[in-house]
Image (cartoon, rainbow, N blue to C red):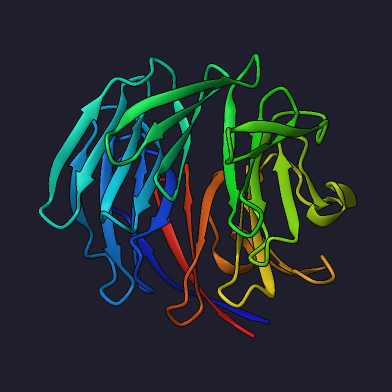
Length: 300
C-alpha cells in the first residue's frame, strides 16, 4: 500500500468537523466551527463553493439521495434543509436546543443524534418529528444503519452502543462497548460486522450475525478515535484520531497497513475529525481542527 498526499483544501476559517459525499464519486461537502457549508470537487482542487451559512458550528451533514436535499445539523439551533438543485434553504426548524452530532436517513426516516442523549426520529416527506427516543444521560454521538438487517446502531457518551430495529424503533440490544464515550459506530459494507471506536482509543468489532458477540479489541490510537470509514471495495478501512493521525487497516484481518501523520506524510497538525474514502482514484479525504481538508491517494 502506497499513500501519496494529493492536495489540501483551505477554505474554512475554523475547525472542520465533518465531510460527506455529495452522491458523486468526486464531490463532497464539508462543515465546521465557522458555520460554512462548502461543496468541493476533487477534479477541481481548492475551488470550493459556499452553499450555506449556518451562523453557528455544524457537526453533522447528511445528503438525502432521493430528494437531493442536504440536511445541516446546526449546533443548538436545529436543522436546515438545503435544496441542492435550486441552491436554497427549503426548511429550517429548531427541532432541538442541543447539539446535533449525527444525521442518518434511511427510506423515509431521518435519525438525529442529539447532545441531550436523545435520538429524534423525523418523517422525511413532512419534516415532522415523530418520536423522541431517550437512550443516554449524555450525548448520542454516532448512528449507523444496517440496510441488510433493518437495524441501526447508536453510540453514546455513556460508553454504550445500542441496537434498534427500524420496525417500531424497538431496542434490541445494549452493549457495554467501551470504557469512555463512543464516538463512531459503522457497519461493514456487507452488514456482517459493527465497528466501534471512542475516547478510550480502542477499535472494537462485533459480529452482527452472532448477537453482536465481540470479535476483537484493538488499541488503535494514542488518543480518542473520532471516525471510521471503509474503502469503496470494502477490503480496507481507515480510522482517524485526536492523536493527529490516520491509520489504514485490512478489513478481513483487522491488521494495520499504513499510518498517515505529520512526520511521515505531512499529515494534519491537530485532531483529525472525519474521513471520506471516495471511488475517484481511490482518494481518501480527511478534515481536521487545523482548518484543513487533505486528500490522499491510496495505491494498493
